[in-house]
Structure formats: C-alpha cells, structure tokens
Image (tube, rainbow, N blue to C red; front, top):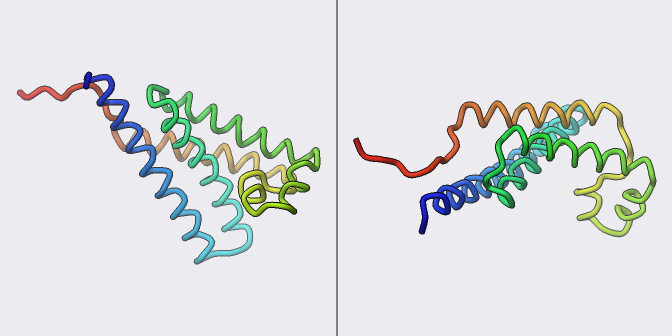
Length: 136
C-alpha cells in the first residue's frame, strides 16, 4: 500500500470516528439539555457531522474546504425548508425529519457557521494524518 493511500485510509478512519463521536455528542446534548441550547448545539453539530462525512468521502480534502462544503450543504438544507418539501417529507419519514428538518429558522444559519468554525478549531488542535513517518 502506498504512503498516500495509507494516509487517506487513516483520514477516513479518523473521519468515521469523528462522525460517530459527533452523533454521540448530539444525542448527549439532547439527553442533558433542552430548548434553545439543545437545538442550536444540534445545528452546530449537524455541520460538524457533515464536515466529517466530507472527509470520509474525500480524504484528500483540506479542512477549510471540507468546512465550506459542509456549511454550504447545511445552508442549502435550511433554505430548502422555505419550499415546504422537507416538511412534507418529514411527515412521512423520521430519517427525513432528522436530515432535512421541517421549518426554516434564520438563526440556524449562524449556528451552522459556528459548527464549521468548531470543526476548523478541532482540526487546528488535532493534527491531520500525513504521509509516511520517518524514523530518526
């Protein structure tokens, strides 16, 4: 296996773990908080989850690009709620309700951006897997 391939596999594994931890964090927030705290934390974590999924699908993606893609997707989903289509789908499917939401809420746009920022902060603190490690 090439060094580049190994680095991408490491990135995918870390992204999968991050996605799982993000889901656990979202469920944890819902278990200990309610109201606006749980809602807006969930919005931010939604974008963090999308960031992790971008890296899972495209491990060579740089964190700022992953954050921008995830933020764009989050905003697109929120704006789609203005059409009523997500609300209709949410009535028929719990999965659609969780992924697409149902009602547009402008402050959510800010919290998605906060989630992208949180992701970038995490990336700055946790080093990204790189190429081969050379022994000194």
